[in-house]
Amino acid sequence: MDFNLLWFILLAVLLTGYAVLDGFDLGVGMMHIFIKGDHNKRIAMNSIGPLWDGNEVWLVTFGGAMFAAFPEAYATIFSGFYVPFMMLLFALIFRAVSLEFRSKREGRAWRGFWDFGFFFASFLATFLFGVAVGNSMIGIPLDSAYEFTGNLSDLLNPYSLTVGLLAVSLFAMHGTIYLYLKTEGELQQAVKGWMWHTFGTFLAIYLLVTIWTLVKVPQATQNFRDFPWAWIVVVLNILAIANIPRSIHANRPGFAFISSSCSIAAFVFLFCIALFPNLAASSVDPATNSLTIYNAASSQKTLGIMALIALIGMPCVLTYTTIVYWTFRGKVQLGEHSY
Image (cartoon, rainbow, N blue to C red; front, side, top):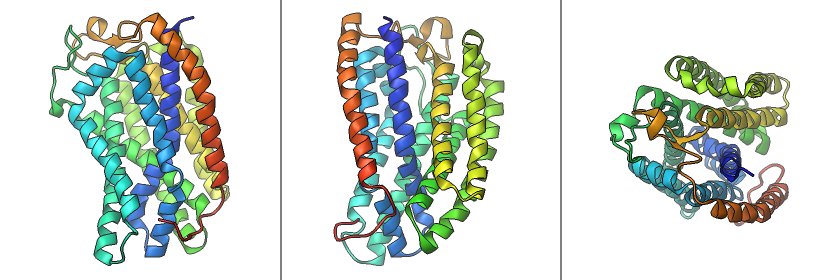
């Protein structure tokens, strides 16, 4: 068995789980600033209150799995993206603090500060994820020792910043659809209009990034020659995106949410297929300086033991996630212990 390929696939699964699940609560956080009224703001926060910390387990597991399976890539990526990762860590922590502190005290200034913090931290985290994806697509400056030789300004290039905006628009749309499912009454009607606006914004940026990627990153489609079946995912992604406005128009938000989830999963797949077999592609000398799933991996014994642990652990994570989502299904109701 090719354990290197297996762990590349497992990392893709973990990344997909995180993007789909934490994507909607990051989206709710970004839309939170536009919600009017304290009661409605609390409804929005409580729509993700029981779920957001469990969703972030997928990200923690992804980081731990990469550290154990591909330590060379982990070291290079985390050192090269050190400042953005510290900003990301700040955003995730500040977002959690905003959730917990916001309703601890009455007062317009107090709650307004944490409302803005919740929005800004959600936006910043999402934007940084997108910037990281953009830089991974075009490659990062790595020397022959796999050391990052660039600086922060190299990472803030126009293409990566635009991919960051794509991530923001995608998660905002995903979160708005989720919020429509969890609310009712006046707030739900307001959210319905937001679904159209966020979808239109996402579609415009998606088309721009797609064209830009085909022009600027021609190697992104190289693996489609070796794996022509991957074009099926491209077609399914287009159909999923097209089904979002159709479902919204037909007042079937559940299908719209499933479609946006499928689109996010397809984006992760296309990102991984564009990188494969690289984990960190070098923009200096892609042929020799890139870190792949083979030259950046742990020993076969380590990968094999980890695969056994994953075989036991993954069903537990999926079961836990399913139980939590089933328990907190339905519309949001504020209670004594609500945010």
